[in-house]
Amino acid sequence: MKKLTIFSALFIGAMTLAQGIKFEDTNFSSILAKAKKENKLIFVDAYASWCGPCKLMVKNVFPQKAVGDYYNSHFVNAKIDMEKGEGVDLAKKYNVKAFPTYLFIDGNGEVVHRTLGYVEENDFIQFAKDAGDPAKRLGTLKQKFEAGEKDPEFLKNLAGLTMYNDAEFAAKVMERYFNGKTELDKEDVQMLLSGTQSTDSPLYKTFQAKKSEITKILPADRYESFDKNIKLNTIIKKSYNTETKKWNEPYFMTETQKFMTKDEAIKILTRVKAGRALKDKDIPTYEKLTIDLYRDPSAVSSEELNSIAWNFFENVTNKESLQKAVAWAQESVKKNENSANTDTLANLYNKIGDKKNARIWAEKSVQLAKSTGEDASDTEKLLKSLQIQ
View 1 (tube, rainbow, N blue to C red):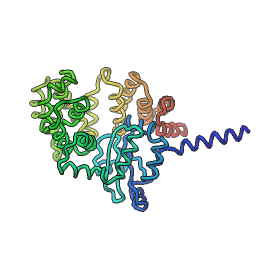
View 2 (tube, rainbow, N blue to C red):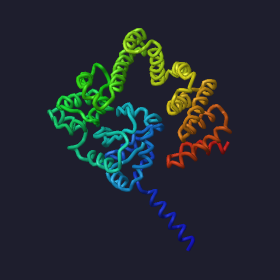
View 3 (cartoon, rainbow, N blue to C red):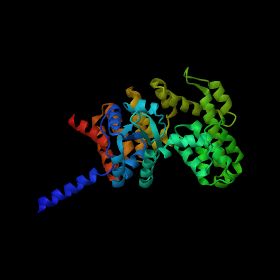
């Protein structure tokens, strides 16, 4: 009877694990071929390993039976890290700029629908149903907009679908939406602030014209802070030549000092230059600028310190610089110990050859992850490799 009880428990556990979305464990070209053969769309969870909402989807939504039932029967499902392996090229091809992004792709490799962000179970299933309905797909919605559709709810939905992958089109949608609005609510203000990225955008005029309405919802100092950031983003974009990969520093300093101090401008320029160097894979420049920026990590948040420490782990090879990254990760843990920054610390210790500390922090990371229901598989792989050595 005891054996039967154990078997039943194992069977129930296996059934539980079988629920939820089943993702293909193969390359994208094979997934495309399967989708074409089965006449299905591909669902792609385009994620990044550091992304919090991505992890919450894995924990809370993907395992749901109703979600699995619908996605498994209607799609070939793929889960791809957009910052590793073939995901890097796929992110460029499909213009993935925010995480998580959900792509619905046909067998020819064309995107027919997309959305993004943390989504609750029912809405997540509805997005899938919309992807399967040609009348509700993104291309059809864009055609409807170009034909002159002015319904506010239609425009709001379309703006949300396109904001992070087609900002220019989303700005046109929002301009029409706000032209038809006499009063703004909180969602309107949030959408306007998210969509207004440049002083050259037509939305910036709306942002200025509706200041009195916005400040009924936001404090005036928050409005001024957003205005400052919009101006700064515009200057940053105009200061960098993507072809020559050169910065126009005199222009940046002149324009930014119209609304901030010289010291502020220098610090921001250093930060954006470091970010651009990392994006351009100019690691020596990124390494030098970042070390200059974070000489004193005491006032930096735990999350930011963990982020830069992980960037050094992934990109930097100089041992002396990696020791600085260890110090940043230690400070991050000191401020707010969690599975992410303890994992970063473990990986950094392993990279500099300190296997003892790598094991200690890997074990700690796995414990923390399991206590909160997070995925610890990558850290467990590291731990296993350390135990073999």
